[in-house]
Amino acid sequence: MKIPMLVLTIAVSGAIAGWAVKPTEAESAGGNVKITALGTHDGEVCRRDRAILFEDPKGATLLFDAGRSVLGPSDPRLGKVDVVLLSSVHGDHLGDRIPPKLNAGTCAKPKTSVSTKPNSNTANIAAKKKSKVIVGGQMRGFLRKKVVAAGGSAKQVQILRFGGKRTVKGVKIAIVPVVHSNGISPAFLDKGLADALKPDGLTAYTGPDNGYILTFTNGLVVYLSGDSGHTSDMETIVRRYYKAKLAIVNMGDIFSMGPEEAAWAVNELIKPNAVIPTHANEAATKGGKLDPKSKTAKFKSLVKGIPVHLPLSGKTMQFDGNAKCVAGC
Image (cartoon, rainbow, N blue to C red; front, side, top):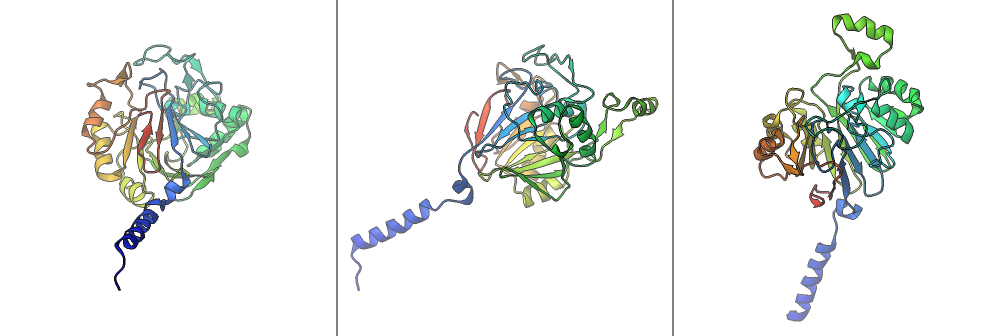
């Protein structure tokens, strides 16, 4: 029996239309993840910049490594903070001092004259914002004391071990290993313990650092490397198991991977759909434009076939579930 051409065309067109409108899981969730670097100088990538604020399409907000650039709990860029994340207790991540205001000093030498010791910028923000704090190692015990001292509750600080996960307002949080060190400066310790450690040049160890895997409700999977050197987990766990699509990698050299090492890790191990370089330990931009002689520019030049997005302070980038930047990049 011959099928009329018009009927066949309608049937095929209907089938194709049916296939076309069938959404993926990420597309069904909808919305974009907003990512905003909170540095010391508006519109720049500067020496002390570490902090990154994430906002899920369904409203959850997460602050990573408040460090020395977030102006404490009253920083107008913060708003509500559901979760505080911390990769290590070193002062540039935990926050031993902060600027008196935005744009103080220069990008290459920001003014960070306000002490946050003995509680830390991280603890002060978590206490005031009533945020959950999710960390690994022995950082939980240390931060519980600091959050309580800052006016918060010990229950805010929650442990998470490698291989586990927690979910906050739909955002899944996992931690992954970091190849680094994690000693607390005596400035944050009880005077008796600090005095005992100082003569031998020691710090108090709080277990291993941790990087993070954040899985947002639109399907976007973000890897936060922390101050890591190379590790095979970048391929086996970060890429093969979690399937990270956006990598935020520390690449300042000496204290973490340098630009060459970080680019190689991105190209050969992580293989994300997009990457954001951070922890550059330099004034990487001037007037919002990348300094061609910077380490960050070197990193960008070595990353092959993967979009590199600069974390300009205060500028919000938006990413879909596949790590495509749809606004702000």
